[in-house]
Length: 256
Ligand SMILES: [Zn+2]
Image (cartoon, rainbow, N blue to C red; front, side):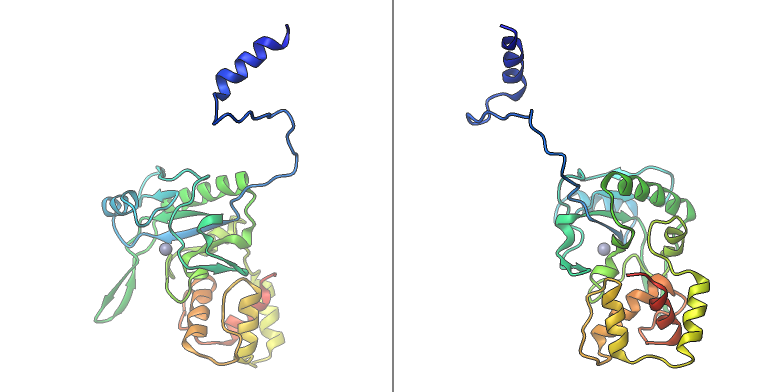
């Protein structure tokens, strides 16, 4: 007699799912989040156009950060897949939409002028909001710092967002991503002793820290694109895709 009300309650709550009878009384302790990566983008447009684009299909992201204020648009549930990464690869994993959360930041990106390419800066308050959001997502899903990346990290042949003005150093200072210690970089520079390593060495090191990069030892455009992506993140003052001593020291100062 004691079990009858419980049974009635479970029928009421569970409904009748195609005649299946689910029993939630035996739960496994061994499980984890499906979210392993967080990918940061810029929208290349203003807020209105960004909202239109991300609402109406074709592309989407879980979160959209306006340029001002602390409001964050939550556009796709974290449990659902959004279409922001496309053909992508990081640390050997491919097509990251299924396993990532996408954050779009309202920023116009770059403009090509007769005097060269100019980039729109990110207001510090916008990055404050982003850091708070990243910490919140990371805490809930246990995302590893090495897996908080930019679109240009996971698709360096196609994408340059969030661009060289995105302040990765602030994310490093907040403990969100791996960041080379300045003292370690200086030490590695001394160890290199003025010798720029060969292309094969750069390709090996870039793969070690996560990038999909050719391993054929030639400094082709694909390899330059990956070096550019790395430089935009860790040495944005010069991101010309040229292997140089400082880039080598930065790579050596990063953990696996
Ligand atoms: Zn993007």
